[in-house]
Image 1 (cartoon, rainbow over the protein chains, first blue to last red):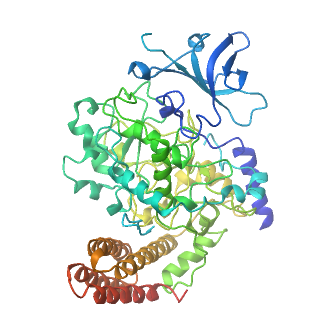
Image 2: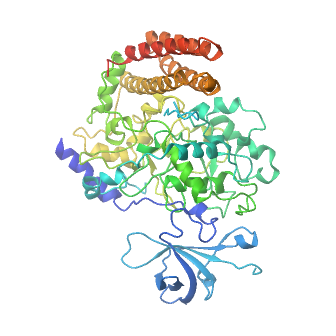
Length: 128
Length: 462
């Protein structure tokens, strides 16, 4: 009996260990900068984009606690926060990450180096 | 069953049998699955007020629109059919901006299905899934996992940190919006931090606050056999993923909390929503893109909160148990993993009498929970003074509703007619108590006696 459980558990390890709890991204897109529940003001980086290295796929954000460089992957979502303009938020691209923009970055858990799970870019009032 | 607003508790993968947990985690993280501490009562009251009345400046819906207390915090076709056409559930039928790609009124009315854009809002015409509305009972003991909280049908229902506290924010964006633009401050407002705290407190207060400790000393012959099958890890195998008929899993190394599985529900051949001829894209479950897994709901509350599974594919509790006999399950990653551990190479195979027995067991568990809640409600009502008559009456009405559920759950399978008779008397007495000006206390106590007699027919003295 114990052996059977061990086999079942082994199957779980092989087949399911990569599955970690996850927040929903679909609705996250519509949450303005600094308002993500349980994330903003707690674990996210909120600041100004200081530099973008497209080749290395990294961004450096200057925030209250200094500058921090974060990597991007193919899984990193980029969203344009247009809530100040009373416009619906949109998906963005690396090209939308421009120096001087205010951004919020949620870091992916369990990564050895800082990697962005998502980046929200605030589109200032008056900009398209 | 339900927790009542009167302040009384009532309480599918990427090819894997994907319990989202490692053995190491399973062995070491009992504490990670520990339920959160009880919140203060005033926060619960505030959360209740928000849950049932706050529209967040949106289309008129509240949390209670889809999670009504009077229907066990869920909706089903029978409940929906009784709603007036102006009910905010039907906003897609009368708000022009929401007529397209917000809900499917036909699938909502026929099967209680709600439209969700879980893989994003960039192609509303094609990217959506249709899901049933899960009840929100027993959340305190159903959400935690070694990897973090699991909310919604696929365990990833909340934005932000993915917690139950954050769930309302996503729900407002998905379901409360006035237009499909979904602009905060225009189409709705987002819940404040204080509102999220209160909503979480209220949701955590609903239903059971602790798991059962099976086996129970049941009296019914069939239900007792059902319990044996349920707990037999070589036959029913139910208790592996629904420990103590709850929402947590244990494969022998300790309880790992709530977990996700691909049980093949999406592969059922004749899903009602598909038969309806409406567009009903496959639901890929957890993640984006999904891995095909869905998390386990608690079973104690199942019998009176159908239809069952994320897609409301099955209407009856017997059908839901029988699902695990079929090809959809036994050819699924979960079924195949179970078969690997079985000396006969069988996933789950139960004969018809065994299916009925497990379902009878679940019906009795549900009825016992209804009775527990009814007793709490009636006792609370009996303790109210004359000045609190209105509250006392509300509590009695809620107890009557719970009692109606317990009668329906037992009567629906011809179980314990003796207990049903007591419950019918209990309901009658409670209704009289609600109407009585001078004999409320006496009649309430008589109703309580009948509830206890009914319970004594189902189970030996606890």
